[in-house]
Image (cartoon, rainbow, N blue to C red; front, side, top):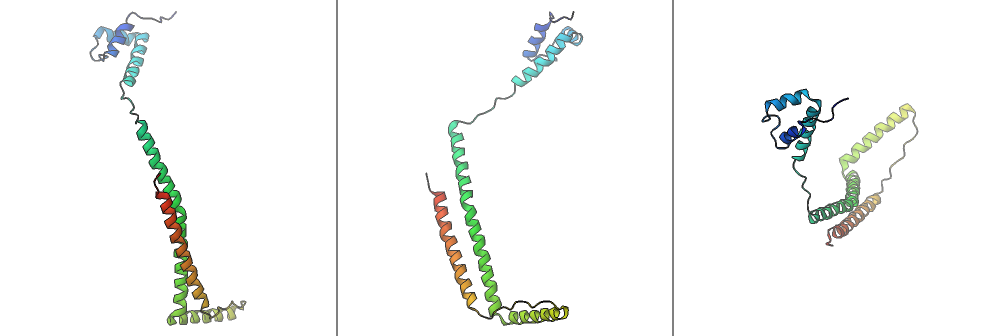
Length: 174
Protein backbone atom coordinates (compact mmCIF):
# COMPACT_ATOMS: atom_id res chain seq x y z
CA UNK A 1 0.00 0.00 0.00
CA UNK A 2 1.32 3.46 -0.96
CA UNK A 3 2.07 6.03 1.70
CA UNK A 4 -0.30 9.03 1.72
CA UNK A 5 1.45 10.96 4.48
CA UNK A 6 5.00 12.00 5.18
CA UNK A 7 6.55 13.37 8.35
CA UNK A 8 8.26 16.15 6.40
CA UNK A 9 5.12 17.60 4.73
CA UNK A 10 4.74 20.39 7.30
CA UNK A 11 8.43 21.34 6.90
CA UNK A 12 8.11 21.58 3.10
CA UNK A 13 4.91 23.60 3.38
CA UNK A 14 6.48 25.99 5.90
CA UNK A 15 9.51 26.55 3.61
CA UNK A 16 7.28 27.31 0.62
CA UNK A 17 4.91 29.67 2.47
CA UNK A 18 7.77 31.62 4.07
CA UNK A 19 9.49 32.05 0.70
CA UNK A 20 12.57 29.95 1.56
CA UNK A 21 11.94 27.09 -0.86
CA UNK A 22 14.20 25.83 -2.51
CA UNK A 23 17.10 28.30 -2.19
CA UNK A 24 17.27 28.66 1.59
CA UNK A 25 15.88 25.25 2.55
CA UNK A 26 18.21 22.80 4.38
CA UNK A 27 20.06 20.36 2.12
CA UNK A 28 18.58 17.35 3.94
CA UNK A 29 15.03 18.57 3.24
CA UNK A 30 15.81 19.16 -0.45
CA UNK A 31 17.27 15.64 -0.71
CA UNK A 32 14.17 14.21 0.98
CA UNK A 33 11.84 16.08 -1.42
CA UNK A 34 13.84 14.74 -4.37
CA UNK A 35 13.29 11.15 -3.17
CA UNK A 36 9.73 11.40 -1.72
CA UNK A 37 6.82 11.51 -4.18
CA UNK A 38 4.42 13.01 -1.62
CA UNK A 39 6.73 15.88 -0.65
CA UNK A 40 7.76 16.63 -4.26
CA UNK A 41 4.08 16.89 -5.28
CA UNK A 42 3.36 19.05 -2.24
CA UNK A 43 6.28 21.38 -3.03
CA UNK A 44 5.25 21.69 -6.68
CA UNK A 45 1.60 22.48 -5.89
CA UNK A 46 2.37 24.76 -2.94
CA UNK A 47 4.80 26.84 -5.08
CA UNK A 48 2.11 27.22 -7.78
CA UNK A 49 -0.57 28.23 -5.27
CA UNK A 50 1.77 30.63 -3.49
CA UNK A 51 2.76 32.26 -6.79
CA UNK A 52 -0.90 32.73 -7.72
CA UNK A 53 -1.74 34.21 -4.35
CA UNK A 54 1.15 36.65 -4.65
CA UNK A 55 -0.15 38.05 -7.97
CA UNK A 56 -1.49 41.61 -7.77
CA UNK A 57 -5.20 42.07 -7.11
CA UNK A 58 -7.48 43.33 -9.86
CA UNK A 59 -8.44 46.98 -9.53
CA UNK A 60 -12.17 47.51 -10.04
CA UNK A 61 -13.25 51.09 -10.83
CA UNK A 62 -15.85 52.80 -8.71
CA UNK A 63 -19.54 52.67 -9.63
CA UNK A 64 -19.50 56.37 -10.51
CA UNK A 65 -16.67 55.87 -13.00
CA UNK A 66 -18.46 52.93 -14.61
CA UNK A 67 -21.69 54.95 -14.87
CA UNK A 68 -19.88 57.97 -16.35
CA UNK A 69 -18.13 55.82 -18.97
CA UNK A 70 -21.43 54.15 -19.88
CA UNK A 71 -23.11 57.55 -20.33
CA UNK A 72 -20.20 58.79 -22.46
CA UNK A 73 -20.32 55.70 -24.66
CA UNK A 74 -24.10 55.97 -25.06
CA UNK A 75 -23.79 59.58 -26.22
CA UNK A 76 -21.05 58.68 -28.70
CA UNK A 77 -23.16 55.86 -30.14
CA UNK A 78 -26.21 58.15 -30.40
CA UNK A 79 -24.13 60.76 -32.23
CA UNK A 80 -22.92 58.12 -34.70
CA UNK A 81 -26.49 56.95 -35.34
CA UNK A 82 -27.58 60.54 -35.97
CA UNK A 83 -24.71 61.25 -38.34
CA UNK A 84 -25.48 58.34 -40.70
CA UNK A 85 -28.49 59.94 -42.42
CA UNK A 86 -26.70 63.28 -42.52
CA UNK A 87 -23.79 61.69 -44.35
CA UNK A 88 -26.16 60.01 -46.80
CA UNK A 89 -27.97 63.30 -47.43
CA UNK A 90 -24.67 65.08 -48.01
CA UNK A 91 -23.54 62.40 -50.46
CA UNK A 92 -26.83 62.63 -52.33
CA UNK A 93 -26.58 66.42 -52.44
CA UNK A 94 -23.03 66.27 -53.74
CA UNK A 95 -23.98 63.74 -56.43
CA UNK A 96 -26.90 65.89 -57.56
CA UNK A 97 -24.69 68.97 -57.56
CA UNK A 98 -22.09 67.27 -59.76
CA UNK A 99 -24.82 65.98 -62.06
CA UNK A 100 -26.30 69.41 -62.56
CA UNK A 101 -22.87 71.01 -62.90
CA UNK A 102 -22.05 68.47 -65.61
CA UNK A 103 -25.33 69.20 -67.39
CA UNK A 104 -24.71 72.97 -67.25
CA UNK A 105 -21.15 72.47 -68.47
CA UNK A 106 -22.31 70.27 -71.32
CA UNK A 107 -25.07 72.65 -72.35
CA UNK A 108 -23.11 75.88 -72.13
CA UNK A 109 -19.56 75.18 -73.34
CA UNK A 110 -19.33 75.26 -77.13
CA UNK A 111 -16.13 73.23 -77.57
CA UNK A 112 -17.65 70.45 -75.45
CA UNK A 113 -20.82 70.50 -77.56
CA UNK A 114 -18.66 70.26 -80.70
CA UNK A 115 -16.81 67.28 -79.23
CA UNK A 116 -20.11 65.59 -78.36
CA UNK A 117 -21.40 66.19 -81.90
CA UNK A 118 -18.19 64.78 -83.41
CA UNK A 119 -18.38 61.74 -81.12
CA UNK A 120 -22.06 61.28 -82.00
CA UNK A 121 -21.21 61.48 -85.70
CA UNK A 122 -18.46 58.90 -85.23
CA UNK A 123 -20.90 56.61 -83.41
CA UNK A 124 -23.44 57.12 -86.20
CA UNK A 125 -20.85 56.11 -88.79
CA UNK A 126 -19.95 53.01 -86.81
CA UNK A 127 -23.65 52.20 -86.32
CA UNK A 128 -24.37 52.51 -90.05
CA UNK A 129 -21.34 50.37 -90.98
CA UNK A 130 -22.28 47.67 -88.47
CA UNK A 131 -26.03 47.91 -89.26
CA UNK A 132 -27.00 48.58 -85.61
CA UNK A 133 -30.41 50.02 -84.60
CA UNK A 134 -30.79 53.80 -84.27
CA UNK A 135 -29.68 55.46 -81.04
CA UNK A 136 -32.15 57.71 -79.18
CA UNK A 137 -31.64 61.42 -79.82
CA UNK A 138 -31.10 63.97 -77.08
CA UNK A 139 -33.46 66.97 -77.18
CA UNK A 140 -31.80 70.38 -77.46
CA UNK A 141 -34.18 71.97 -74.91
CA UNK A 142 -32.39 73.64 -71.97
CA UNK A 143 -35.38 73.74 -69.60
CA UNK A 144 -34.18 70.47 -68.02
CA UNK A 145 -31.13 72.32 -66.73
CA UNK A 146 -33.30 74.75 -64.75
CA UNK A 147 -35.26 71.86 -63.29
CA UNK A 148 -31.92 70.30 -62.27
CA UNK A 149 -30.90 73.55 -60.56
CA UNK A 150 -34.09 73.57 -58.49
CA UNK A 151 -33.74 69.88 -57.61
CA UNK A 152 -30.18 70.39 -56.40
CA UNK A 153 -31.17 73.49 -54.46
CA UNK A 154 -34.04 71.60 -52.80
CA UNK A 155 -31.81 68.63 -51.90
CA UNK A 156 -29.15 70.89 -50.42
CA UNK A 157 -31.72 72.89 -48.44
CA UNK A 158 -33.42 69.77 -47.08
CA UNK A 159 -30.10 68.18 -46.10
CA UNK A 160 -28.91 71.34 -44.34
CA UNK A 161 -32.16 71.76 -42.40
CA UNK A 162 -32.34 68.06 -41.50
CA UNK A 163 -28.68 68.00 -40.53
CA UNK A 164 -29.00 71.03 -38.29
CA UNK A 165 -32.10 69.59 -36.60
CA UNK A 166 -30.52 66.19 -36.06
CA UNK A 167 -27.31 67.68 -34.69
CA UNK A 168 -29.29 69.86 -32.27
CA UNK A 169 -31.21 66.78 -31.14
CA UNK A 170 -28.06 64.70 -30.69
CA UNK A 171 -26.16 67.34 -28.74
CA UNK A 172 -28.94 68.42 -26.37
CA UNK A 173 -28.19 67.97 -22.70
CA UNK A 174 -30.19 65.48 -20.65
